[in-house]
Amino acid sequence: MPTHTITRRTALTVAGAAAGSAGMTSPSFAADPMAPPKPFDPKNPEHNLIAFAKIMAGLDGSPVWSWSHGRVFGITKENELSTPLMDYVAGQLNQVRRLKDGSYQRGYRGLIMFTNLDSDRVIDEWKNPITGETNKVTHFKTSGGSSVYTTNGPYSLGGINAKAPSLDDKPFLLGWSIAGDDAWCTYDERVDYIRPVDGAHRVDNAVNRYHVKLSQLTDPKQPTCDAETMWSTEINWFTWMNMGARPGHIMWAGMGRHYRSLKDYPTSTLEQGEAKFPGFLTKTIDWSEFKLRDPSLAPT
Image 1: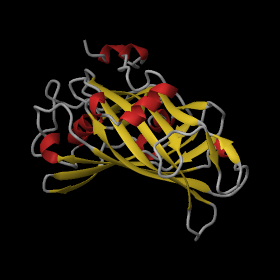
Image 2 (image 1 turned 90 degrees about the horizontal axis):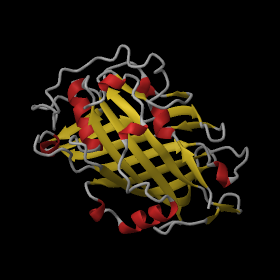
Image 3 (image 1 turned 60 degrees about the vertical axis):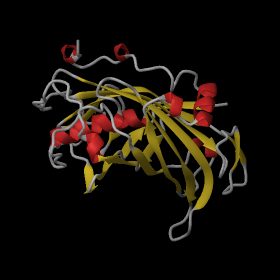
């Protein structure tokens, strides 16, 4: 069963970061905050930074696991309906830690496994409804990566040739919609990059959306908050689909949630993920694997 190690999420936060952390502001947080301040201000970069870190994982260092399920569509012509191709299940392990300058480092590992339509069983072969061919399926894992988020935006500890709107040097602000105790935020993950594994040019129009309870988000007694997730993207054909020069692209859409414990995690995804990528979701992050640009920022 072929698999690819990809670094799309690392690509999102690396281009334009050659200057390192120069120019990144150091927010004046209270020591090790467990929540953004009250009242929460969606236009305040410091509030956004803490909120994003808390949505991703526990501010006390505890891991959070994300799970999502969705569908992949093929678009071959403009002004025509897309073709349902396959479903997918995805999982990711996230941990965060606060650095000495008030920024947050995020460590993560993720996987995406494909299934037939209306199934949660991972497949090894797939019948392409557009070409009529049967293809060997390549499942994906995002290699263990790490990014650092500051009030002036993110940068990555990896290295890849990429362009992404999120890398512009600007205040770190998510798109928020708040209605009573319900809060939704959008994280723009669009990226244009060259994939190191095969040199393929990829244009990934990914957008992540999160729904949380504002009362949980701002509660200092809770290091993380329960989050429902929505994710969509449009991207080039997968190379393993053997589409050649055929015009078009794929469109994904999915939803899921975060889990504070693997005991509650969907059993089918965990078991199949462990079978294909042992330890990928079950081993916690080893921060020593990621070398900070300024080692003195590491918490002691």
